[in-house]
Length: 256
Image (cartoon, rainbow, N blue to C red; front, top):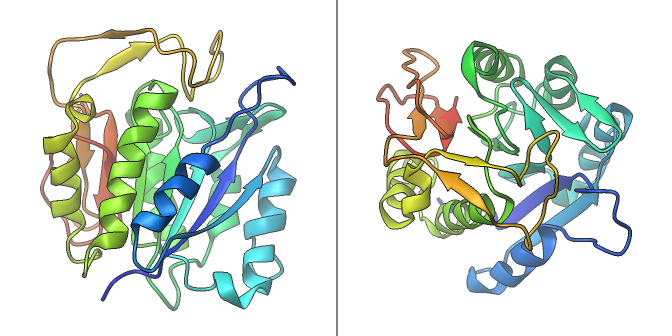
């Protein structure tokens, strides 16, 4: 069965330049009519732990008070990031807060949380966060990055994955295949990159206009990890870990 064509996107403001405002939302809006039925995008800017809880926390959060959002299969968090946490302009949103914000989301229907932020699943701390997040929230999968990534290049990979996820007649069964197809068709998903711009804390400048990046030799940059039997690659960049998956591959990272 196809996933409902709904996407909940919670995003930070990317910098303090008031005359330079950009967002992932217009990109998703442009992709929306390419899906059948068209993708519906629910979007809000979130700048604090309290703001995140206001929208997501059970049972009083906005997404739990609006019936039309109940079956959204993807929650996409676009922030700066560090291992085990995301970062807004006003401060860190820690791992425990993220877990509490999505606690119980796996009850009743299948969904995933997509951390579109640098380095959230990086290293021991990122792996520990992913495992704890899956255990406490019950979501089907977690997707995130294990290195610093360029804003525009990573968004292209995100959109390719999401477009194929929503078009697939059975996306939960085919998560592994969807992941592999992005890796095959978008070479940047297979490259580790160090960049001075992107979805990272402490970036000197971020946004679509800033694309300068340093690319390392071609190597595996993604990891898969199963909840029951986990294998993590030391060179993963885009990581997908999903329940029932026990193989390790290279591209974004799903956990579940």
